[in-house]
Each structure stands twice: as structure tokens, then as C-alpha cells.
Length: 622
Image 1 (cartoon, one colour):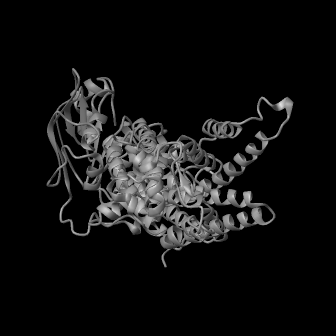
Image 2 (spheres, rainbow, N blue to C red):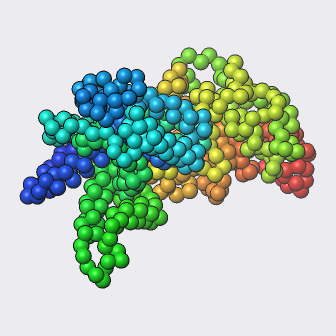
Image 3 (cartoon, rainbow, N blue to C red):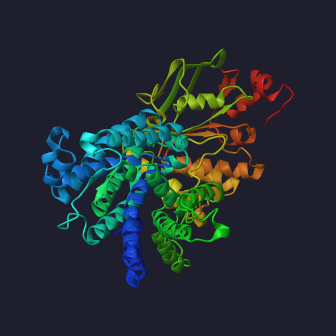
């Protein structure tokens, strides 16, 4: 079994089994010497854990805050109740139910399956709305849409009395003949499935793409990742888990009314997720435990009669505790108690430390691992920018720009500030639409393509102000793009992740978060991440920005080596003329949105128009 399988499947599965074992044993110990109220508390905690894990699959992996998952839970809960309650009892409660639902008689298992299927179907249409609204990490539109869903479901449940029996009474199972949930076996089964699904989804290609987009939506798109697809998949899977947990909640309580799945329960579950750590499965479970027992403690405090504390020890103390916990953690520790820490990651780290003194087997010259450009390419790809013009209002940023670059050369773009260099890179990578002109890569017309599709076609970029997936590790930054390349760039030989890490000097830092890197290493990581896409061209926007002369010279070797490893051409913007003249085969000069000169570095240095526009007539560049 490969290392990747152990890291992304075996260890997470083993860790998930240990997590549920700890939860079950902890619950048994808590109820061993207590009354039935303790048993009820643990039962509700375990069911809440299933629902919170479902929310975590979406919120934790995509970063999109959702208030609508409890609304989905309400749909599932009512569907389950309408299908599972015996026809005789429904004739007393909802005799006028539409579509003949009063006569439907399904087993609890069948009812649960129907509830999950129907709710996921509704979620599919909601996901289309979220995608159309451009939902991304932190997007207000997603919060508004999901919050609206919660209120719509509540109002329908409260007012469609023929189906739901209204807001005050609701639907209920017969209290006789074991009509409600008996024992905890189904809870254990669904909780194990929820933990495994949440944990393994985080390790899938879709999950890892979603996490990359969560960290930086724009950078993910320019690396070939389409966040809309990942968000839709995460939403559907998360709603399936929430629906199963909600049906189980209704079955255990034996009744349902609109208040059961409304704002109070939304606040409870989101607080559990935020307190523990929304980005991790282990954190979500820890948050459930903390808030469950914290709420129980404050409930008992509120029942105490102490005159001097009567101003605080009163009904509603639990709500104050929940609101205070959410507010406090959002301000003081927004990532939660455990952030994205996972129990199985801790186990894997222990294993790594045991092997710490064992150096990698292949520490030979990385250049021996240099890759050819592609498996079947006969000639280098050619990138052509033909007559591109861009206007921003009344300002013309680019004027009929023409550039040609071959994948076997390094091309530089220089010019004074405001010349249009970064705008040109933005047009090439699809971030800015041109008013006229075309961009071709070999035989492909890239004009009008979205950034993710352009990246998959073979153009990836870095940014002037580097954009990393900050809360992912150094290795995970590279692996996410390497996974994209494996899916969409399989016609080319892909660079090895270990080789990239060693080449840029980040092997020792591979488990660190990208946010913890110093400036120089962050720049090198961004370069290695771009190279992991196995592109035809690396588009570099001021890769030496903020570096001293020594670091700039080292970057020349890094860029050349990376281009050689993946067989790509390079288009590079930079103000460091020593860097440009030291690395480029061909240089284009832009001034006021126009190409005023092109040629070798020596020719450009001697060009009078370049001296006048960029270098200054008295400047001599060697």
C-alpha cells in the first residue's frame, strides 16, 4: 500500500474509529452512575454530533458560513415524520394531508432514506443558487441565501397546517408499542458513518480542492481549481449527513414542531462547530462535548435560587452562554479550540518523529529527476498575444499589445509603473477581460475562458503580492495543485512533490503552515506550487519583489531549474533589471500600455526608446 493511501485513508480511518470509541466510552462512563437524565443528555449529544459533523463538511472545507443546514434538517425531519408515523395516527393529526400522505406507511429505515433523498434534491437546487451567486469563503450572498432558507422552511412548517399540523402542536409518534427510537445502536452506526465520511472527505481530491479555495479563492482559480464544483459536492454530502441526523433526532424525541429546527438549534450547532474548530472533524466533536456540558451546567445554575445572583441565575442563562461562547471565540480565537488539528494527524506526526533521523532515500541531485516537457509533444508550445486592448472606463491600460513566447525560452516584461504589465498578465490568465484581441496557446484560443480552465490548459501564475493557501501546510499547498495537474494535465509528465520541495529548499518546512514561512520561503513556495501544475508556461509577477541582490540571484537559478523540471516556458515581470537581464532570452518593454521595444537583454539595454521611457537617458545597464 502506497504512502499516500496510508496518509489519506488508513490513518484517518483508524483515527475516526478511535474518536467514536472515545465518545462512546466517555458517554458510558458519564451515565454509569447517573439517572435517566444523563442518558438522555448523552443521546442528544451524540445525535447533535452527527448534525454538527454534517455542517462541518460544508462550512469547514469551503469556509462558507451556512445558516441553512438546520433548515435542511427541518425538511428531513418533517419528511421522516410524515412517512414514519402510523396512518391511523396521521388520520387524527393531519387527515387532509396532500398527495395522499396520510395513508403512507413506511418503516423508520425507509422513511429515513426518503427524507435524505428528498432533502438532498432540494439542496441540489440551493447549490445551483449558491454557485450562481458566486458563493466563496466569506461571501455575504451565501449567508443571506442560507439564512433565507432557514426562515422559509420555518414559515412553511408553521403555516402549512394540512401537512405539518402548525406551529404549536406539531406532529408526534404514538407513545405506545415502541414507536420511537429504542436504544442507541442506530445512533452509533450513523455517528461512525458521519465521522468517517467527514474525515475522509477532507482527504479526497474534492475536499482538498475545497480547502485550497477556502484559503484563497482567486489563487485556487488561477491554479486550475473551480470552487463551484467543490462547494456543490460538499453541500450535497453535508446535507445528506444532516438529514440523516435530523431524522434520527425526530425519531428519538418522538415529535416535531417548527421550533425544533429553527434559530435556537442553529445557534447551538454553529456554536459547537465554532468553539471546537470548524476546519477539523476532531475539533467539531470536541465543540459538541464542550457546549453540551456547558449548556447543561448553565441550565442547572439557572435553577438555583441565590438572591444575590438572581440577576444572572434566571431562565435564558443557557442562551447567554451560547451567544457568549460564539462571540468570544469569534473575537479571541476564531479558529476554535483545536483549529484544524486532527487526532490522526497527531498520530502520523508521532510516526514521522520516530523516523526523523532517517533521511529520504533519494537525496541525489534533483536535476536527475528533471522531466521532459510532455510525453508526446513534438515541438515547444507557443503563446501568442495578438492585438490585446483593455480599457478601464476612460483609461486605456493596454493598446494593441502583441507578444509571442515559446515554451523553450524565458521572456521578460519590463516597463515603468503603470505601464500595463500586470494588467497584461491578468488578461492572459483570464482575470481581466480584454476589449479586443486574442490569446492563443498553441492551437487553443484562450480568450474568454475562465481562469481555472486557462490554468488547466497550461498557463499558471504567481502574484506580485504572493497568495498562498495560508492555513494549509507547505506540502499541502503543492499537493493540491499536483492533484489538479494529475486530473487535467495527465498528458504531461508531472513533477514529483518531494523533488519540488527539495529543490526550493522547503523539505524541512513541509509540515509547517504556509502562513508561518518567512518572505523568501513563501516566494519559493509560490513558485514550486505553480510548477506542480506542470504548465506550458509559468507566468511570474515580480518574483524577486522584496528580495535583496543575493536572494534575487538565487531566484534566477530557482526559476531556471523549475522551468527545466516541468519543461515550461517562463514569462516574467520584474523591476529588478539584473534579474531580468540575467535570466531572460527575450525582453518586451511596455510603456503606457504599448509595446515600445523587444529584443535580447543586450539590445534592450541599448535601445534609446527604452532608456527614455524606462531607464532614463543617463542610465547604463550592463
